Image (cartoon, rainbow, N blue to C red; front, top):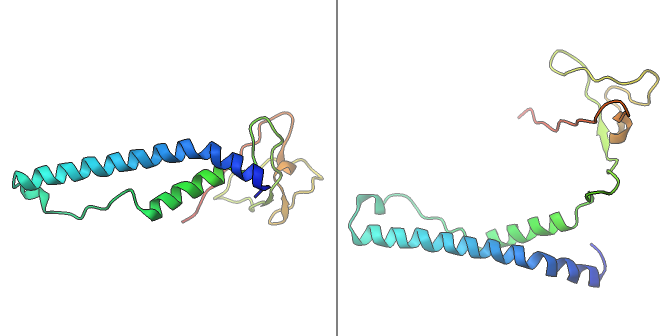
Length: 133
């Protein structure tokens, strides 16, 4: 995090979006509550089934606030230099598409390298962040 004045500025920038999210969650909870009350008053069978989980909770508000903070303090900024994070090149094989890497480059299979080691002026850099789970 930055200095106190920078933190105050970020907080003031985050507040409108945070409060609009809180307002949406409060409206959503109100609509669900009104629907449940109307269903109970009309003695509908669907009124009693299922548990209603509120959206506007302290845990939910904390999560929204933290997501806004993460977005405000992210490293990547539009128009600035790209970050050069550490990555590991996966081995080529039947499951993996082959990566075109120039001969004599610093990139070794399974070795640690930097993201921008893969960049080239004649093609765009496409990174696939996937999961095998």
